[in-house]
Image (cartoon, rainbow, N blue to C red; front, side, top):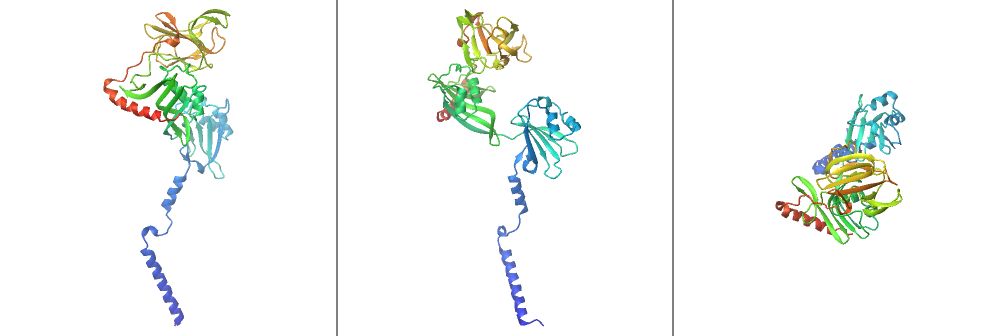
Length: 418
């Protein structure tokens, strides 16, 4: 028979258990404490660092960059791949990855398992900032694909005053100097970028592309203004007849029949003259052109659409040169080229801003430069004074809408502090 003390203890235990059960079952559902495996897994996924479309922290990763004159085969052999494996990996279709065009300075990575085998799982070659080539060894047969890093665009603004050059002014403001090149393209028909002066200023509203938090060299100018010699020029983008062009605030296209210059802005080393001292011939003679000093290999553009009527070499004069007839009035000539654009031939019809050759020092020349000449009705004229006819302006039907867009963008530009 149970003693009285044991019976009392048993009753207390039963009552305690019952109260505990009653308390737990009466709690609100969300306060019941238990392990939520689904939430835990979600947290792990959220915290995972993704790179190359993979959870990068799950691998042993070896990073490096391509050396000068290094081949893909050499890289793979150094990473431990056999001669046979290297050969097979080098047979990638050119449409995905032309292994002969691997570039020095580009990054690559080998992703291996973290276990004791360290088995290679992926080889990645970064073909520029946005794209990469992925070799996948996770199956019995390797796969190779070309993929892209996810990117996003962010609206930004920059403004500044020029003290030495537009390029340097952009850098001083922390913006990509490539924006300076974009501005020279947009305002190339209205602003002489060879004649900009200290005190000239700019305001730019633009979109910048980012990969993760890193900006890449890809920008889109939303609107811009440039003040030169006290006069302000605006660039307002607008789509008309299916074509987006930049217009001034009056609705006239900034794109004219001719560019202000046949290359991105560089120094003018010699101007149009009827009597110039020739540095090679050591005598005075006419120089019916403008010399643009620029590094060898700098792209040279056709200042307007037209037909190539000459492409030749002149040993005692212009060296490699191209001549373009734009219409019944104007012919332009581009001299001392280091080479011609690939495939360019006499009879070709070229478009405005199309590359036709590259700056050089062929022919009678003391250094790399472009000798650019313009003939009007068969007579040489100063290229810096050539008239530029604007493209089609904003139509009457679009004027009201254009003014709304223009007023809004001009207001945003003026709010950017210099």
